Amino acid sequence: MEKLVSLGIVENYFEKLKNNLSVDAAIVGGGPSGLVAAYYLAKAGKRVVLYERKLAPGGGMWGGAMMFNDIIVQQEALPILDELGVCYKPYREGACVVDSVHATSALVYAATKAGATIFNCYSVEDVIFRDEAVAGLVVNWAPVMREGMHVDPLMVTAKTVLEGTGHDCMIARLVARKNNVRLNTPTGEVAGERSLNVEQGERLTVENTKEIYPGLFVSGMAANGVSGSFRMGPIFGGMLMSGKKAAELMIAKING
Ligand code: 48H
Ligand code: FE2
Image (tube, rainbow, N blue to C red; front, side):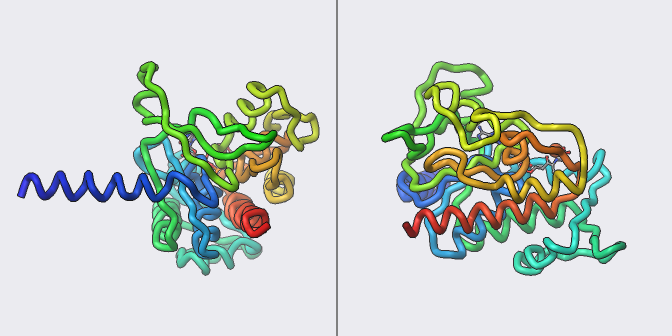
């Protein structure tokens, strides 16, 4: 029985790994925007893989506001919660309150149920750069990166890559710096996030969700960070709508 347990995991895991070495969409980061993008891409029948460096995907959504584990979602984003089967309570002016633990786990469930593969405990450390385009990801074990061990990575080719890394925008930063290229952002580089403004931040998150370099798309806080727009605090409609828009743009690119 001991051998069966180990063999079952090893054989299945390596099968999963092999099946995801060349994909339609590779997503960096399992925050709300990345998870929603993974859901819609998978639902459209695309082969999608998502890498999350933490043990649990979900990013900044688990903790609500200052660990008060509720979030606000505005009216425009409720169709996404309905589609993903997330429960919410009407509050005021069309906005709803959502239990953040319920919502975060629901996004993880919906994305994987739709067919997206999530590899947790993986760090994306670089991209594949070919013919002046981003053509995939370079991945490693998150603990290897954290320990600073000199261990070479594995590579995954992808028709489209989504940076959903949150506030850091580390993928956009390294693509611009390492390859000395300009991004499709107001400054040509990572502009950096501005202070808090809920209305502007929410609107611009969706507006700034786009392809910032051939093959490389941005969603969520990374979309704001690269374009120099505002943070918005614990309101999550913009993150959800950004993930959906990213998926739509990527599907259009994959379909040529
Ligand atoms: C693998 C990585 C890597 C890497 C990072 O920050 P997130 O929750 O992402 P978003 O943009 O979908 O959501 C943002 C939201 O949570 C938020 O912070 C808001 C609304 N803030 C407002 C405010 O005012 O502060 O998740 C990003 C995920 C995390 O889980 C990281 O661990 C992961 O990406 N990640 N995974 N390889 N190189 N970098
Ligand atoms: Fe945040």
